[in-house]
Length: 393
Ligand code: V47
Ligand code: SF4
Image 1 (cartoon, rainbow, N blue to C red):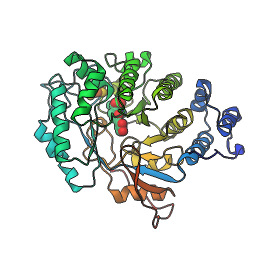
Image 2: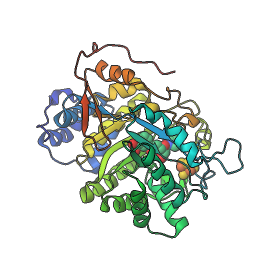
Image 3: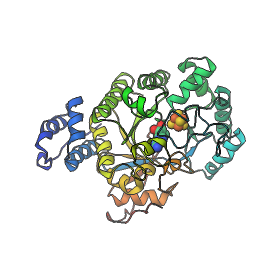
Image 4: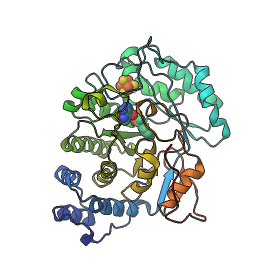
């Protein structure tokens, strides 16, 4: 059970945030206007103080991670020309287009033979050749070869795509995939729900209400899921609040979300970055920390806020552990999507690097399973709090 939240109000320099801070101390739910005030405030340390207090009340000093492996079975996508922020997708005949056979997926998955990998995170493009049977066969083969590995696969957008191709409902697709081995859904595909934003960055992509609808259908079947928000492109602060409100509302209804993961937009290697003249300019550290902190404060019905170090660098992820984050995207083998759009971070952290990063922030690392059950805690011999973190490549 969460402990009472406590922090010194004097640490919130922005007086305009004091009414929000008082609500946080009293355990009163924040409203949209509060979230807007938090996003707009320049008092990053004040916002972080509140988020850190709420996070500590829930999780103490524990920071979890899961040893996972990303597999991206195809980059062929029917939305290749309309998701302007995506540098990963290809048309079928374009250079670099690929679609794995089931054997190739198994070959990628072979890293899991080390016995350490506990989760496959499988997402890809909306390919007309990868229908329900392809994923059923893939999941069955993975479970047969790696029965101990959890399958977190297919975003709401991919589920809706398969449903459309197969003329099935979302629930029918989800049930069939679960029967084949699907365990949970990842949070990708959310982008920013606002229809004005979608019109600008991904006009043909599944809308926000339908993203929520697919997750609602999954939760109704007992399939838990994650959720995300892509930030740092054309969205306004109001758009961010609307997005968080939709996530919180569904969580009130179903309690099916496991974690919230803000994703920093990377402008390299995609048309949107060119249009915005933003090449080489990823999100700011200020915004990265604000995003996790406001998520922690507004999403009071979410247990877990995760930082994706591939997007924000291991260094920012480490600092975010004091801004409301309690979970780190794990050891990611062969990640393709972000590296296609210019992420300069390493493609995987070893267990030792992850432990060093968490301990270096004065926290206690713990490995978890995909449902956030702690499997082992590494509470021996922490490094000094100022131990250097593995630098980005
Ligand atoms: O939906 C695409 C994003 C997402 C870019 O559920 C981009 O545990 C930044 O959702 N810049 C997929 N982002 C990744 C994802 C995810 C990652 C880690 C953990 C989990 C989880 C989910 O990547 C896409 C899209 O929002 N993306 N292009 C880009 N240029
Ligand atoms: Fe396709 Fe996803 Fe890229 Fe959009 S973001 S083009 S749906 S792979």
